[in-house]
Length: 347
Image (cartoon, rainbow, N blue to C red):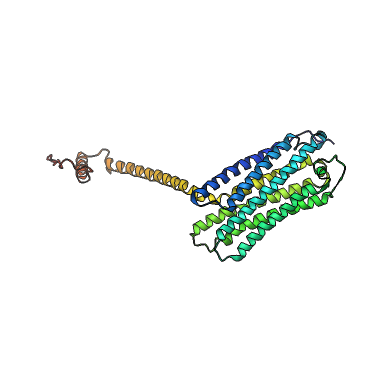
């Protein structure tokens, strides 16, 4: 049965574009914070490079969707499929590159904090993780273009030649996705060991650990992406890859962008502190002003309304005026005129 002619390419564009723009804003603010309060390091340069790679990947996604990515293959012409798959594969290359350098940036950020510390094991683990991320993802990128002979057959299925078995390609995709999720969970757990011996307040430890442990979110995205990609490359779905791979690509794009965004949140703390202090001071003043106003209103009501009487007595009002006059003499801010003596007796 022929499926309906629908286009779900917009899901890829919306998911990746919104998260990419958000990641750009956060990474730029991170760079500003480092320039103002510290200095740019290799972790910052790696993250900026990751953003550049993600930009190219997003552009490739738009071009692939423009050529028909998101539609069922049965509705596409033979002229549409080669450019569609070319931009699709190229977008995946830059997507994996962006994710690679984002994770290397996270590892370098941890090494920056660990500089001069005695946690040798943690430093070694961060270095090994960065090397493995680079190695595994590089192998996956090479496989995109080495899987077919000639190479052009990778994106032009109508050319004569041979390609790897589908099971090999599926295995590599699952390997990369599983390893990506594993490293995300590991990097999100590092702050627990990183800050436990740090000489800062308990509150700051909790805040820092919470911010830097948000990487577990990208681990969830990587897990979903791996499942979606694995299903799209097996069975009948493999013959309709222009439609079935869209959701896997969407999760992959959001994973890389959210990884860049989350990894850049902790360095924003110095930039956010003045705003937080100003906001806290403003709210404190508003609350204090409200309490003062309420106290004044309650005091006025208690003064004007004497207990058990419907109207205030003249003697009480005169006594209050005398007290206020005395208070004015003693608390005057100018003291220009001598104090006046009230010669009128109170009856």
